[in-house]
Amino acid sequence: MEIKQQKISLPEYTNVDRDRFLQDIYPLRKPVVVKGLHLGACSTKWTVDYISKTGGSKEVKIHVSELPQMDFIRKNFLYRTLPFDIFVQRAAEEKHTAFFISENEKYYLRSLGEDPRKDIADISKQFPHLATDIQIPEFFEKDQFFSSVFRISSPGLQLWTHYDVMDNLLIQVTGKKRVVLYSPRDAPYLYLSGDKSEVLDVDNTDLVKYPLFSHARRYECYLEAGDVLFIPALWFHNTVAVGFGVGVNVFWKHLPSQCYDKTDTYGNKDPSAASRAMQILDRALKTLEELPEEYRDFYARRMVLRVQAKAYSTNYE
Image (cartoon, rainbow, N blue to C red; front, side, top):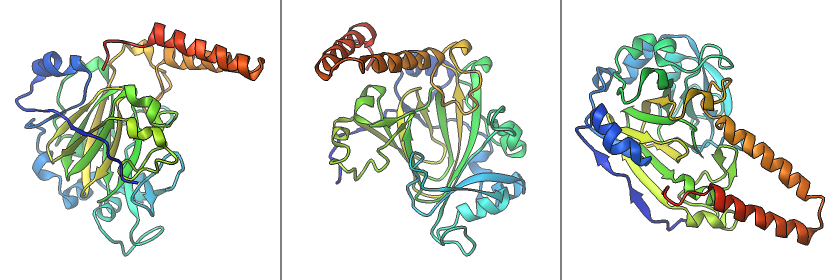
């Protein structure tokens, strides 16, 4: 069913330097599109042929899906390995003569560290020759840096709705991308499974299965080549590559380093205090199961009221 949500366009900024970003944009904790930044030689150099040749033939782990909508919760894709140069050429194709599943399959690369269990993604380490072409906006202190993730998507590929626990800049180097976002405040309407929403098709959602989704406020933008989207931590986002797309996500720590899980190399584990609080909540709910239904219902509602009174912010929007 097509959703009749109000579409709120993201504000666009030009002539943004570090000072303006930190003074006018960052404190608001809302997504914005920044245009006109100097991103380096990548803006003109990063053609399909150049990327494939410069990136080399080392093997990369990729997502492959027969469907244009990749769903991380239901895992409707395969993990496969290809030499990087061959992967890039395939990802740029509308139809494939060589394929894993079908001639219409879609590809997605999310770069990883050398050992994904221990190392973060860093384009300067995994793709050093390509990294020299891109000038990443220095909107944060060097010790706040977490990762720089190289991403390549087939035309028409849609990625699952999710949030990240760190702030990030989505740098759209080539191609056009649609990004739909939802505020952290709309989490009750997004049917969460961990850091992901069960709602993948945000345009034609099954409202019988997900009736509350119609209450979520939809923010939207189209990124052209050279645009940069600031996505604050906890904002949900769902992306569609309108054409073959190449981008770099740069993540940095908004909170002090000790607030994050030190074993997290992907940047998707909740802050340590949040994880502990959720564990305590799970134990509390387990304890309520000792009571009869009407008592369990009553004390659960009291718990909700206490959370609302003690933890909900009246200023945050």
